[in-house]
Image (cartoon, rainbow, N blue to C red; front, side):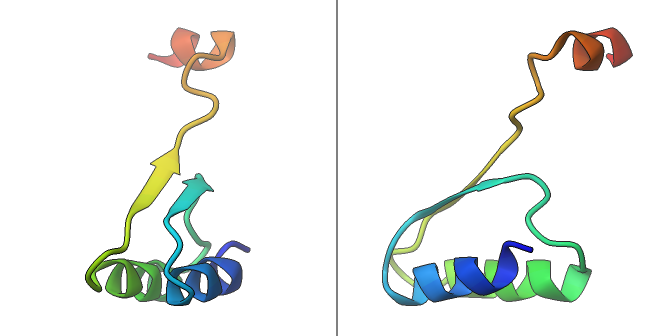
Length: 59
């Protein structure tokens, strides 16, 4: 669900902060990574549930 917006944003030269998952398909993840590898692009993928109680229980 993030792929189209992410690619458009990166094309405009913005840095991007995504929630996980980056994309639902491997091909979309590859497209995003290829765009990020262009000079001057930064992509960060956040893990918003990393401090949730149930997630800590699973660890």
